[in-house]
Length: 378
Image 1 (cartoon, helix red, strand yellow):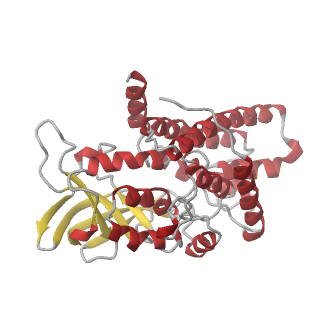
Image 2 (image 1 turned 120 degrees about the vertical axis):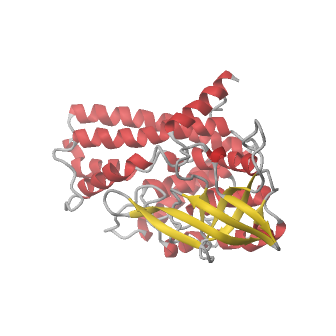
Image 3 (image 1 turned 90 degrees about the vertical axis):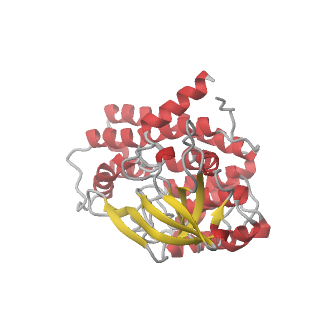
């Protein structure tokens, strides 16, 4: 496991300043910050970012992208998340689906989907987790049966972010029986239209009634052969390679940063010595995690596949997001109230009710620790 020390170049720092200036003018003064990439689904804002060249940054120009680095994308994502920008529409497709299509997709699939992703107009969800399977992706029971011209897919996926708003999702399913002693064999990925016949989407609301997660039931959903992503039977290898993108970015440690920013703005110079100590501990942890996360982005640009390092970033990052909420809850003078006129109080209340999901999505804490431990022992 390696995390090479790195800093941003002058060009990357200039990009950061450009994004900050854009957000200062683009987001209205009464902007209610989103908490993380899942906070707000705003297609218009996604298209605006795309016109600035900040969606599909790492997609090659021949597919409508900009051919920039993973670190450039990191810089833009970091600023958007810190400001609580509404990036939920395009984020998963940009972060994860686009690299999967570039690595495993057919030329037809790249031509079909990547330009729309880069334009902020085509949105993807992930179809991995299933009921009663926890984080054991290899135990998936969704199955695809060969029929003329393609496959019929039957099964259920859960924690499917924004499925009610998005266009497609990449479904991990079993296309051939499990082999004795090798439960990873026979798994494949299929691109499924979320509006196809046989797809039923049911909300999984948060405690505050808001809606981001879904259960997606598939009943004999037809998927044509040209929508198979990658090679049949290589689904396990493909999804694990995607995890370096899913688990390592600033979206795994900045979800609750807008709460901290609102607290500081409201407290101003009235921060006590005890509160300053809390802030210092949080800032030190955030800085350390950021360096780990940035190191993974550099490794991706170098053509590496740092899946183990990404697992560690996600584990320490999402725990930090939750610890930040608890620290600010203790520092608050009263119980958080979503209906409060105080932005800090309202955001803190939202974070209290939604942050338990952070250590579930993208892999549970226990699974990530297992992955990191095996990497350290290797």
